[in-house]
Length: 350
Ligand SMILES: NC(=O)C1=CN([C@@H]2O[C@H](COP(=O)(O)OP(=O)(O)OC[C@H]3O[C@@H](n4cnc5c(N)ncnc54)[C@H](OP(=O)(O)O)[C@@H]3O)[C@@H](O)[C@H]2O)C=CC1
Ligand SMILES: CC(C)(CO)C(=O)C(=O)O
Image 1 (cartoon, rainbow, N blue to C red):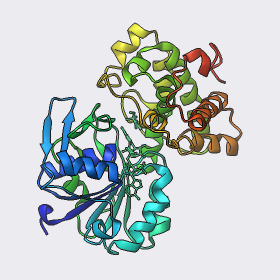
Image 2 (cartoon, rainbow, N blue to C red; image 1 turned 30 degrees about the vertical axis):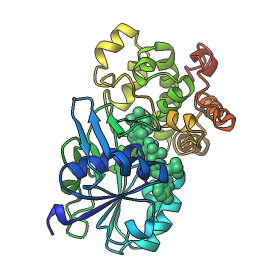
Image 3 (cartoon, rainbow, N blue to C red; image 1 turned 90 degrees about the vertical axis):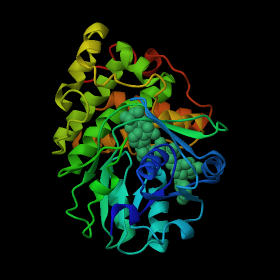
Image 4 (cartoon, protein in one colour; image 1 turned 30 degrees about the horizontal axis):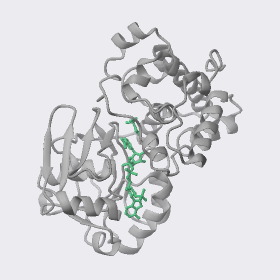
């Protein structure tokens, strides 16, 4: 079957799902978005605008893209299912896929966190499930703006597990289209832990409310991120986990590079700073929308390792507590200053 005849279902079309689905539809792939009513109504009314930091800006008309809120309509015809819900919704999505999708549909997790593919496998029996990793940020237009726009605000290749030819299907080839570079990787565990190191910054962006580029340009925030990464690297090492390099320096060098003075950091970490001024983090999106965050799957995953191995993690603990407080308050980003997150000197744990 040619790539254009395969049906790709985006299971949970929000920022990542709409961007990925939009790129695939623009390339002539058959795409169905399984979405919530807000996204469905917006796409039905105005289509989907796909843009990126390289200057691409295209409208996907609603007649070349299917969209529904009904899993029983979306999932039965799927050849490939891309799971793009937040980690808290993974179990629920696994149950929907299990009920409605064909047993030979290939399922790919495009989520942050280290165990979403395992959660899907646990709920999907014998089906092929591939872990994936999305390195870039996607900014979604404010509610009510038409057409709904999803903007890729940084760069990088999507990595997916090398599952051989899953059911004779070249999944990376099917998904690799304009605006969306996809490659396979032989060690997704390392990739996901490497990405998780980057994602420790999601909470700082969420707590500060600052755009990612501004936050990273401020050494006071970088010191807190360096403290978290330092703690995470210790816990990972004690657990026998070797994280892969994702963007910028090797994981072991990240704390040192982050602690450099601003002028030197800006020179050395140009790739890390190649970010659209509007980009923040998916955790900031969650606080703004009053939704639970992925703090348990990000900081929480490292805290579990730290607890098991007895390595100290004071910075991770204090960041986690602040995110939980902001989640409970449901007032959006609390707009904290770095000194409110970790006292000067306190971010140099260990
Ligand atoms: N945003 C980003 O820039 C990046 C995000 N990621 C990761 O990608 C994953 C997805 O993130 P993101 O796209 O930001 O998340 P979003 O919240 O924007 O998108 C997920 C969407 O799925 C919807 N959804 C949940 N359950 C269902 C269901 N049963 N049926 C239909 N729709 C459903 C959600 O609706 P509702 O909330 O109303 O339930 C939401 O609209 C996360 O793991 C995130 O960490 C990775 C890299 C960058
Ligand atoms: C791309 C990155 C690291 C930060 O924007 C992210 O994964 C997220 O927002 O969840």
